[in-house]
Length: 486
Image 1: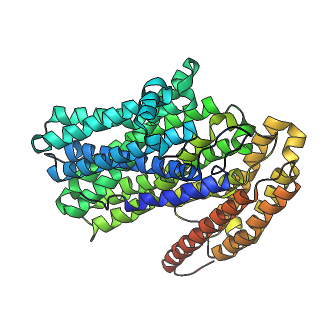
Image 2: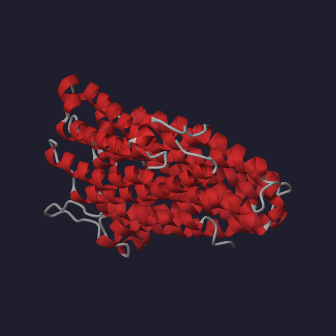
């Protein structure tokens, strides 16, 4: 078994723990006379959920790549699936124990009682979902354990269908699964999870297969790229549907933590689409001409893995928050929403723009990054702190107008750092953006938790440091091609 598949995906555990800490999800309100889950359960549940998701994705990826994407099937990759499905099953059993501990407010050791197990699996809705997952994963393990040497297409399809069903089953544990009024929500979330599992697991296993066999380079990546494209289409459609069903107003998108994390997922998906499109349009068509095609693919895939890990961590955090928490103080912007609207989303569009056209030699914005930085800072303070747009246009329309204004200021700044003076603009943002966040939060109607502010500022600095290194390098490469500068 190859345990090194998708190594960078495990970085999401750190993101997950930071998010849970920032949102105070490791603490439970205590009421007199009522028991609460132990600390071990509160910390163990998110880690186990993340491990279950990664193990399920890698199992599904091994099955799809080994049985369908590699010409003639690959027994080696299918043997990887046998190991990962065992990890999936063990993790799922442990997760069941911790879920019983959480639901019953008992210790994990007490949750090992067989009577408690049978009562949970048979009498509760959550337990029946877990029972289905356990049965499906055990069936996949049995299929692979007893028939992997003579794998047929029908057997492979059976294993893939069972794996997809087990991957999508957690959708029934969401709030949409408890009411017949939200059937569309549950079904779309299940399809969303299945598409994510195919995309993430397929990429990780495809890259691992290329490392072990270079001969697969010319056939495997084009096939995976086509599958990934369909997965992205399904992800975008189901994600949009789920967001519209769960968050019903513009103010909830930017003023609640649930809506803000949906914005984070949307921006991460946008960056992932850009990475995948670069790989599909630039790397794959030129595989024969590249001196080290595997290194080029690994470079793009490494960035994708980090973003995928963060997106999975955000998804688990959303499931823990629950969409009933998508209520907000009218007209407020959370620090995370400000980061997405002012920096992350505009930088994404600016990056896409730079890959589609040649950089102009002169422009007003490129010559004055200081002005763009000041405009961005002032826009954040005026819209998110003083609330100038909501006071003029009302809550919902004001939030929409304010979001557009912040995004426009972020776009102006993103374009301004696309030039020889990019360092000035980025450094000013590294200093001014955190100050603008703190000032806007201090004068807003409701203050954010200090932990959310800290996490947002750290994420902002990391994003800007990355932009500083990439933009500086790109500027040097571009200017080296020019005989003179204006």
